[in-house]
Amino acid sequence: MSTVDQISRGRVGFLLLNGVAFAVWQFTEIERVGELFGEGVTPMLGTSAVALWTITLAALFAPAFARQKSTIEDELTRQNRRAAFSWGYWVVISGAILALFVASNIAVPADDLLRLVLIAGVSAPIIRFAVMERSAPDGE
Amino acid sequence: MENERLNNSMKLHRVRAGLTQGQLADLVNVTRKTINSVENGVFVPSTVLALKLARELQTPVETLFYLPDQ
Image (cartoon, rainbow over all chains, first blue to last red):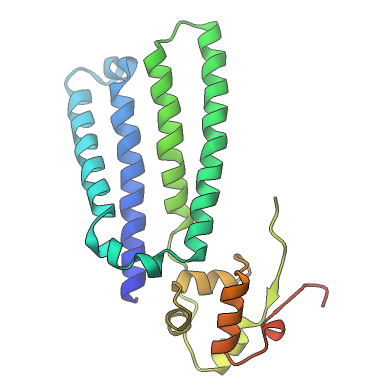
């Protein structure tokens, strides 16, 4: 595997972790999730998720990725990013419609609903982009 | 919107040129995944990339890429 492939694979891993960590962090901030998992587990899980999200975010801006940007940012990657974020747009719109429907029928704290929409808008496209960027099988 | 189909004979010409996907990727400055995706018809390359590939494989671009009804 070439260096570019290794860096590209590393970036996919960090993107996946980043998207999942953000979702976990925001989930643990939801009041009902805290009640569900217990007072001891949820803050620990939330803190770990914030730490992981910060580390992966810093790693994604690390010089190792920045130096290789011109090579790993080719036209397929740009197309995948556009597709993932266009898909994310529809996820957010669908999430907002669903949130409106739920809020119209039952009493739900607004910040909890907004967190769910935020998770849909941030984590979903990042994870989708990472999945689209997975390495191709060897076809030499 | 569904992508337009574009057939190609990339693999045939690449193997004939004695290049691996990784070597061809380095020559045209893209990742191996892009070459793999083009070969498998998953990704339709830009005109610029198609011309670069044709130049590196020493093949006319219309031989390398062609419409399914041709």
